[in-house]
Image (tube, rainbow, N blue to C red; front, side, top):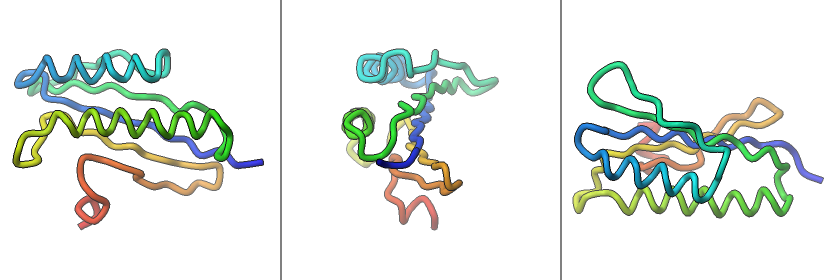
Length: 118
């Protein structure tokens, strides 16, 4: 059976410092998620840009849900691979989950869960 649990990835990057990395991540997202990826939106200042990967709409436990879980992990790993030796990264992301019971969770980001909530 299953229940609806939406996952949305929000990616923000410093387009002034690393425009090539932002483009690479956006292209990777489009390769993995196709039409679920928004266009790149320019912020009002400081050169930051953002795009989003929309939820796939499948129920937890369905094959499609499992397939997109793997794709989200692949994109997150790709973004993490763009980090510098000290772990810093000009590209930040968050994978936010929210479900039909109004539960909300951060499934992954550039930081571990403990760092997010400290």
